[in-house]
Length: 179
Image 1 (cartoon, helix red, strand yellow):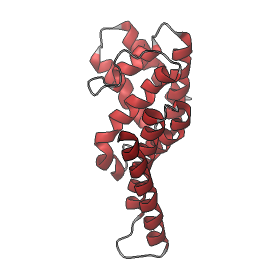
Image 2 (cartoon, one colour):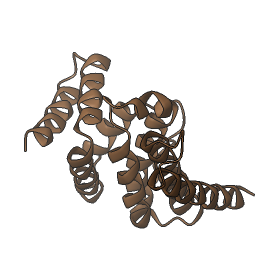
Image 3 (tube, rainbow, N blue to C red):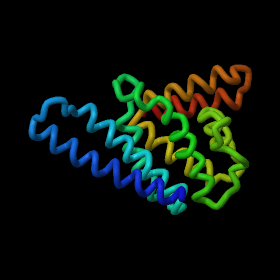
Image 4 (spheres, rainbow, N blue to C red):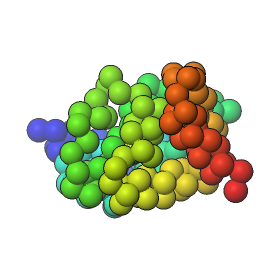
């Protein structure tokens, strides 16, 4: 059932994108680029979910996560409309690094784990391959949505401001933003 839900939602949002695009192109009253961008972000989110959660094709889901994060920027009206999806999308994006490598994420990615906590766990994980993949994925994210990573770095500092490990991870994220 879940796979059918993802696939049906992806088709519906893709169709809605096409209809909205045509309406914008034709100058139809009420048709806006803002609404088109919402449909595009919605499509990207369900397609990422379908590929990663149903088909277990984590690498192939990454471009859809990137499209979502490129569209949903903090200083954009779309941010408030997508607010409820931002942390879950970021959590799944990062937890997929564990899954892609066939590692047990130990329950990460559940609704109770913040992206900041996942970032610290991935950056400091004993498996160097996981840390490398997480840094690569995070660098990709820094290129498309630096504001989101800045928020994560700030959250890491606020969560455990007394921990040198947490501070080091926040520093590494901030260094990615300076490149």
